[in-house]
Image 1 (cartoon, rainbow, N blue to C red):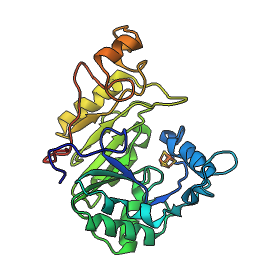
Image 2 (image 1 turned 180 degrees about the vertical axis):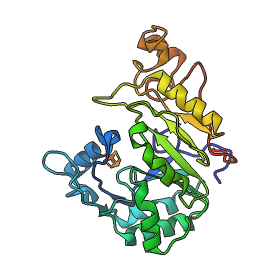
Image 3 (image 1 turned 180 degrees about the horizontal axis):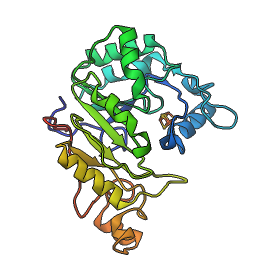
Image 4 (image 1 turned 60 degrees about the vertical axis):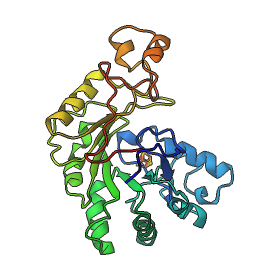
Length: 278
Ligand code: SF4
């Protein structure tokens, strides 16, 4: 488990220290994908000549559905990170994407197994593919330093939750981000961690404070550690939306994340039970 001293970080994502993309490429699944940041970045990286990103997007800037394995150096990146760290896997893909090969997944899992000093966070919008993929690969359970989660951006895709509750992992988690509509009250028993966050960037959509309050209260009811990453933009922040402050005034009180992160003057930054990030 990561040590108490703060490891260096190479990403601004508050709930992790590094991102690692053993392969890249995806295709859209649901509303949470509408303004996919990875898709836009993949276009830029392809134009910059990065080999891994060639052919991943179409001329119209949309995912082509192809998945490419990263260079050997990138594939082995966790081995080069000496400090115990949280590592978010496949920010530029979906680990369980049908176009990714089981060979690449197996090789990536081998590195995660070798790097027990790190915690690897694997998120998907395709939780229904996890069990059949692991069964096909002959894996009954992922190592305890691999956390498995799913994005459930709103209540319309709440049918993903039961798959997460059955993930064969020591820690399971829900990422309600970018939260683009109300999540609602669902059974989240047994889930190890819940993250909320608003959308940022161009065409960012609204996030209502009450949607987040509802998840905060639901997490408390099920004793699930709760992490509110950000409001996405200050217009969503309750200091502006409900109390009428300007974005500049709110930013002085609440400088966390993008658009601040305080909810009713509290910063929610809990991690899975028993885990203390550096
Ligand atoms: S699953 Fe993630 S990476 Fe893939 S299209 Fe959706 S938002 Fe983008």
